[in-house]
Length: 287
Image 1 (tube, rainbow, N blue to C red):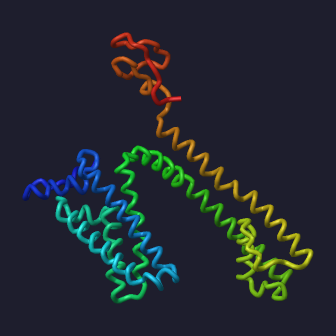
Image 2: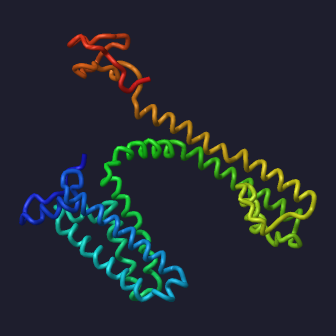
Image 3: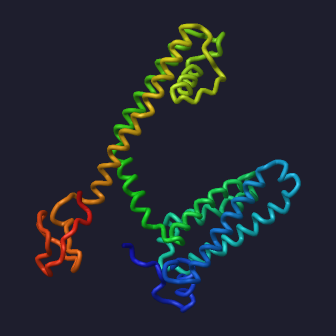
């Protein structure tokens, strides 16, 4: 566990401010603050979204811009307060939430010199991830780590799969260019490869379609291949996910058998009663 970033010296208000801004689990005021902060974040994201609608911007653009600056000033004050309250400013500034907090206020200031960069403040929605801490959902992050390990373990097989798919669409797209030609909309090999990607992924926009019998037959083959290819990465990740979940639980055996009474471990695999207190031995993590 990382050491606390709570200030160890300085005036008392720094510690009190830190508790309100960071200690959701132990400080009631911090919990209330985080809930209000999330509501303000959602409101600011809504303002940005409404500002991108032309009809709404035409009627209420000035009010929306004022609201955006109000939110930006509030978030700026909050960021400054967080920086002032922590022991290590560098540690907070380089943390995930520290970077997101900073990025959520920069676009509005940049909009003074760069047109429409204010819409980049939509990144504020990432700050709602604080809800995991507020609602005590951090336990689910363990499951996210299992999924991350599964994806990392299968990355090379997925890369090989993607290279195979890219090779297929280049070859199939080239064939379709030769079969159909510009008359059917296949004006170049890149355009034909785009069509092959759209068809193989079963999206099928319909902006380009083959008109000859041979081209339609090839298109049907590509569509059927697409359905088969969808299952490949799913199977790869599923296998690795099962392995990662098994590793997270731990192998079956001695260290997974504990006493239901005194909770002592180290029992033999076939033990039924605790060698310390005589209580019943149960499995807690093995298979």
